[in-house]
Length: 146
Image (cartoon, rainbow, N blue to C red; front, side, top):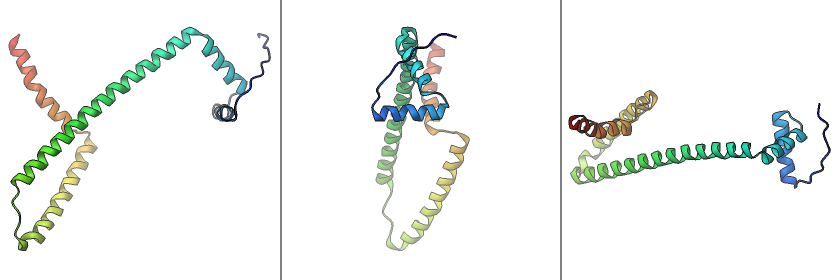
């Protein structure tokens, strides 16, 4: 077993609290955690690996955020297009038909919510289906060109 030398380190209260919390969580000695941190800091290979790992994770997160942004933009545009078409094409109802139309609207809404719940439970996504449908003609064009 290697001889260990003592080192005194001064930490601010917040850092000490974090170290104690980690030591309790990991059931490890504070000095072992501090030693591992110092070794990691002094070992450039570990630092390079750490940087590469963080970079890969950031790249994955960036791609994920880009996909979410694209999907959100698609959803907002589709909703806006639907609302504009609906408002343009839907005539106003006579006063006597309002109650029946509201009841029918509530029934249709309940059916919509149930159908949506079933699709989400199955993992079906309309955006994925539409993306496949839109890209299909491009794939067909590519096949006929070869």
